[in-house]
View 1 (cartoon, helix red, strand yellow):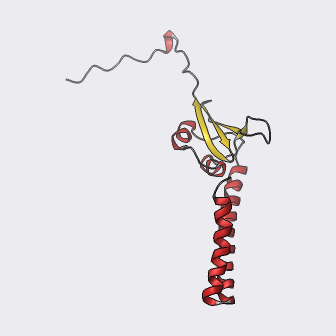
View 2 (view 1 turned 120 degrees about the horizontal axis):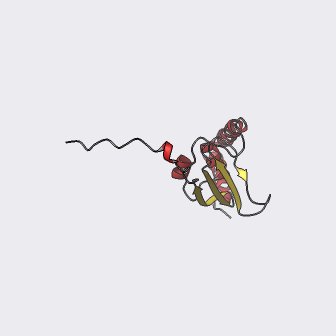
Length: 147
């Protein structure tokens, strides 16, 4: 269980108690209004991320390489969805822990992320091998070295 699940509600109650202690019921109203505003800001961000993700195909992103570089252990699933602007393709069984999601780009490279408790625990990237070049598709001769 994350400490945030305990500290955020305790902090909210403490803020309301401090508001009452210093300003009476007006302080309670002010601190409660501040808490509601904070909750609405987080809710608005969540809705905006999901609205952007709903407009793209599930499991696709612009560049798997760029996602792989930006990923760090401990990131939340919502943060990864915000970076990719797409929902990931669920690769594990529904409601099973850990959850495994995959994002694929147009070059068939993919990044597979493992989330334990909603936080990124591992990720890996796969790039397809380059296509074999036949004799008639050989790149042109290299330029001579500069003098």
